[in-house]
Amino acid sequence: MSTTTINPLSMMATAPLTTSTPASDSSSTSGDWFDAMAQAWSKSLDDEANTISTMSNSIGDGNDDPKAITMLTAESLRMGYLSDSSHTSLSSVGSALDTMARKQ
Image 1 (cartoon, rainbow, N blue to C red):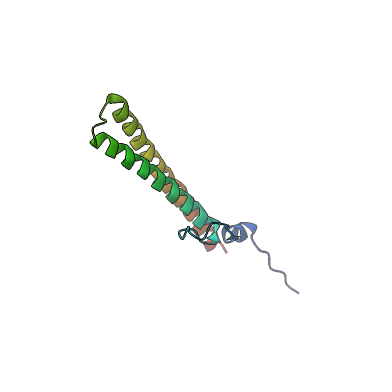
Image 2: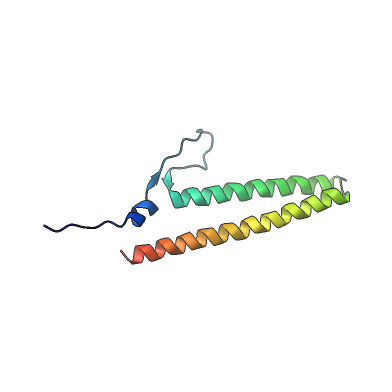
């Protein structure tokens, strides 16, 4: 009788993720945790882009005092940081999952 050993990490990588979100949020779906991480980064980046857009529109409408411009600059730098962080984390986890899959 032979026994098969299952790698717990590979089980975790493909573990189902159940989400309980309102039906009106069509961007959320059930999937694995890698999808959930990507969706969370996507939402964070979308929220930051909306903040920058709102601040930019305010400056375009005449609110061009130094404080508003400095805040817009800070939010733009934050967007760059979030973008770089999302790319790094998704690439690192994707690469780790790829390596794990090849060792199966």
